Structure formats: structure tokens, C-alpha cells
Image 1 (cartoon, rainbow, N blue to C red):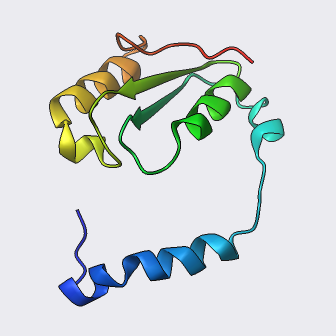
Image 2 (cartoon, rainbow, N blue to C red; image 1 turned 135 degrees about the vertical axis):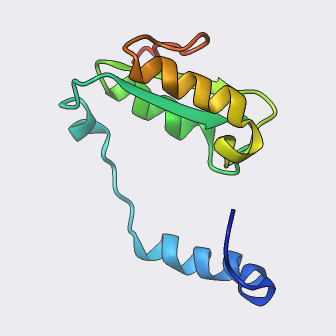
Length: 105
């Protein structure tokens, strides 16, 4: 999942803390309403990033669905590749994967 050395991986949380702080407090939800193409968001229930963020993005886009994966963390394509790739394949074929839901505003 990460090609860093053991030393660099130990320092990752320190680097992330400063990297994320440097990004500022952007709120893209208003601009997401112009994203009218079908959009599938896949988010693991155990992801350290809050699921509420994915729900807000899905609610902001008029043609988006959210697929929440139980017991899965930040890397669903590694942790549950069969589920992840089946969902992506179905989406790319023009259908919503089972369990993908529309989030109301």
C-alpha cells in the first residue's frame, strides 16, 4: 500500500498533520452541485477520514451515490478488492452497485 521505508512510515502521521493543515479549510460543496455526471463515492466504515465528509459530497452532487463498506478502512481496493472492483465494474457499465444510496440534502 505504501512504498515508504519503515522510518518514513513511522513519520507519516507527523507529515500528514502539517500537510493537511497547509491545505486550508476549503469547502467545495457549493461547486459540487455542477458535477452532473454519475459519481460513485466508496467509503469504508473504518476509514479514519469521517464518513460524514463522503455523505456531504454525495448529497451535494445531483447524480451521486455513496457506497459505504462495513468493516473496511481507508484502502477498500486492498482490504476488499472483490467488493470494491465489482462495485466499480458495475458502475462503469452504467448501473449503480448494490448498496449505493442517494444521500438527501
